[in-house]
Length: 137
Image (cartoon, rainbow, N blue to C red):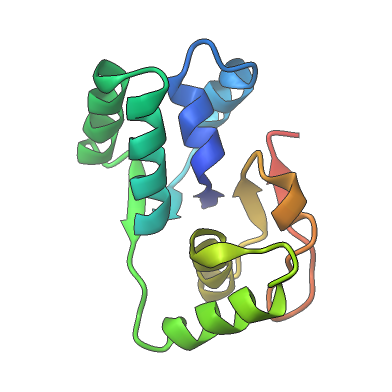
């Protein structure tokens, strides 16, 4: 299972993005499942619409419909952990989208995150203190 952040989805959808090839290969070759949150989907859909455009955004939504990407919601107990992470990393600032990925990482004991956001995820640690493996490498 691989957690997926906004930037990787955007780059995979945008042929002109300098990280397109690496990100497209990552999401295509990963045996899966690919896992993300609703915040990531909202950000990615908005950015894909703005940059490569509505046709690419429609393709993104079709990939969601096909089940290529599993979108997991937050549980009642997750909101406190999101608040804790946002507060702990206020100097970044972390924000709720990245904090929600941190919550999923902890819930599923995952350390691999597909992200271009090395600024945040090279600093953020799950509750056990272990670092994330950031992909593409």
